[in-house]
Image 1 (spheres, rainbow, N blue to C red):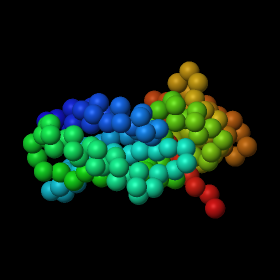
Image 2 (image 1 turned 180 degrees about the vertical axis):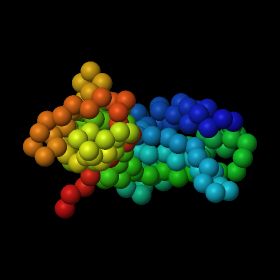
Image 3 (image 1 turned 60 degrees about the horizontal axis):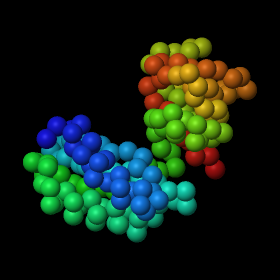
Image 4 (image 1 turned 30 degrees about the vertical axis):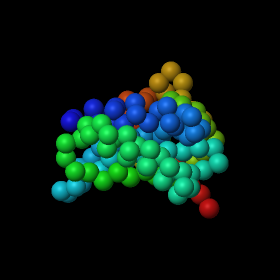
Length: 153
């Protein structure tokens, strides 16, 4: 089964369970690392994710996938929190984490820098708004390679 189809199928199987249990499905990826394949599911909830949450989702998903048997090759199933320094990908996440410190990696430099660190303001009209060095800048989404939330002590 193609990587994209595995991810889509996993989302379809999980969404009713995720919504019923007040989790947020942050992401699903089916990747090959070395000789091994991994099906990774990232979940969250307002109060944070613990080991019991990961186990609960893992057991549910494992049981469903075992019955359906849609993945031909062997793989490892991993369920976890995306972590405090998570990668932000969606408009929802850009607005949800408004006010947080982020690191933005760019495809091409802006002001001589390919990596910017600043306070996220959100996204509007496909422009990511951020304060960098006390200056508000808007970066077109297609110029951004990666946005990662930064945890500061």
